Amino acid sequence: GRYETGPGVLEGLRARVFLPQVGSVDIAGRAEFGAEPSFDLTAEAGLSLGPAYSLYTEAGVSEEARTRIEGKLEADLRLRKSGEGLSAGGRVRLSDTNIERPGTETFILGLEADLPLLYESSLSRREGGAHWDRSPERRPRRSPPTPRSRSRAGCASGSSAIPS
Image (cartoon, rainbow, N blue to C red; front, side, top):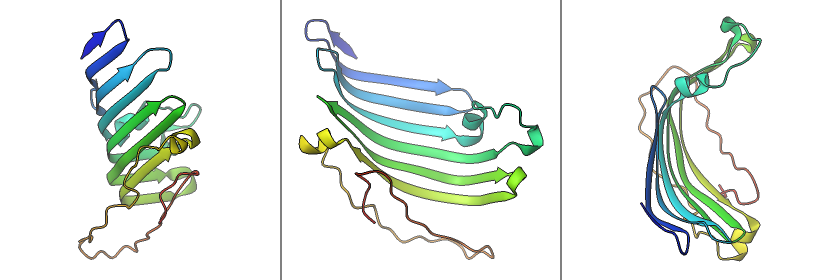
């Protein structure tokens, strides 16, 4: 990007964080570093959950008893900060995800998720917010029949969660 020292503005910011075997995060946008820092950024991530989770170790837990996570995480996000307001919106997708906790005999296998994300601080909402599309993308799911039972659950969190 291009940094203008007078106003402290970074235009055309582009960065890639690459972690071998884990994946990458691409960030693009604009940032201001003046008296009231602000930014308007897009972030795209493609991560392999197993190697990413291995960066976090369960100290004092034997290898056989450790939680194992496999799968892929993809995210497309827009992050904005202006004044005291902060907002984030986009989608996080999980695919081919398995979570195994041998100690409790908990096994979540074949998890697929497409989660809309929206967060707006109360100040961001008062200032007009990010005006994210609050309706999750609806599309028919075409999955082959499987002998496993399937569960579907909706979840929301925080004061600005997307209504179901």
